[in-house]
Length: 401
Image (cartoon, rainbow, N blue to C red; front, side, top):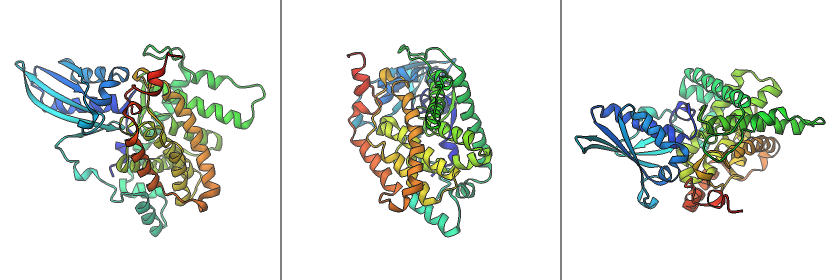
């Protein structure tokens, strides 16, 4: 597996796979073919069907500026594509194509370039399953956060500190903002209202629900507005982990160092999902984004609470298991409905999952590795209309009733 630096990425929303990944790919192509007169980018699959709503065309055009870039939205049979988020980039000189690069945006801002193997030095985790990682740690009496430091080096803590700062900033900026999100749906920002709408007889549980959800809404709204966020594991699911961790720190007084260790453990879960299944809504539906984010948040909370490796695994497994089959059907291709609200629901579900793990770990029958494989197979079985194409579900029915 690769470094957590490849999982927790900092950049502009609204979509890691539809803006961050394509923009990075265009940057690479531009550096390799700087003398072209102009460029052409052909988008396929989910990039084509939801690219306008996700602002993919704007991202790639900016990447080549000030040179001209033509963006083509192409309808192609997904079965003929190597990945649901596939794009071809061409260099044009004297009216003719002089170079081509095929890129797959595989989720979380990560890209794969056809014909170019992943450099072996980028693979820094030799263990490839939770079972292998747990065995490694148990044999050495090591916590998962210490395992991350061993594989990554102590420099990972500075990087995670930057990630945590970004997460806190996206929440605070989102809480302060009001008005309507761009895109034409007329979706009003709700984080500010949630944070300030205290009931006069509010119970502790109601307070927790309201505040956690306001944090998740804040991050999701910042992402939808194109603000700077940290992927966890993606842009569309960026609010789950920070909402759960910020509330835990606020309510229980955990240090930033403890939160960074929690982020490290959540990162292991996200890395396993990315390596052994998917974190791409276009490939496996929203279970791969919000479901994995919930799993990351629950595992991170378990680490924060000092729970053991078996409990951390169970928390992560429960959180993902109960998102199986979650579809990705964004209205008009925008990361707004149902995406933002799902961040809030998943943040609360992460808290519930870690509570169950605290009591019931000894009864578990399902491993995290098994639930990952199940999630991937479920996602591949989903009809293409429910995999970030905006051709099914809410996206298709919105406005009819």
